Image (cartoon, rainbow, N blue to C red; front, side):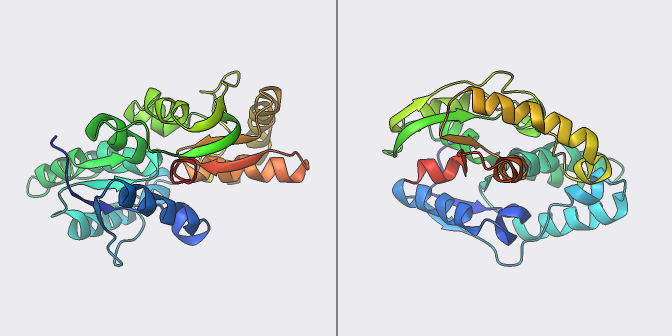
Length: 242
């Protein structure tokens, strides 16, 4: 895909409702690069919570709205691997018996990118001139890595942050225990998984744990706060916009 001078942002619900500063950071990144940003106000959830809970009709309605809003966008960029995985890999499943819309759904998915994936793979950008003086570790979110295959792109971006020391935590690709509804349905299992993740973060001696999905980072932040541990959680966009 050729470099676009305009991107349309799809902002994850958690960012929109709880962490708007991450959305603003994404905008600043593209402003640095001289790329025009559009963010449709009529966008809503991609339907992933409904899909994962078995409500396929409701998920399909959300997907239809997504296609209506973003169907004409040249490039769609989202700061969440989880949402991109839904659009790219699960929308075709929802519309597999709809010959009229299936090709449109697939085409829209092919133009939908996670933020670091778009920066590195499409724009060819790794150094955004960001600076952070401190030690950073990185958490691989499940849908980002296993769903859409994004693993090295965030690391390449982090390594270019001036002043930062990047250190890998043990088992960085292990789940943090969030999984959306999973954490609600199975809190004991979720907490046990999260305990292991937090231990690995602490063992890394990092001052900041970053990632590409605020769902995971919100979950991690919760236990870090409850344990009064001095580690900050920052979405990668917040580091790159600095």
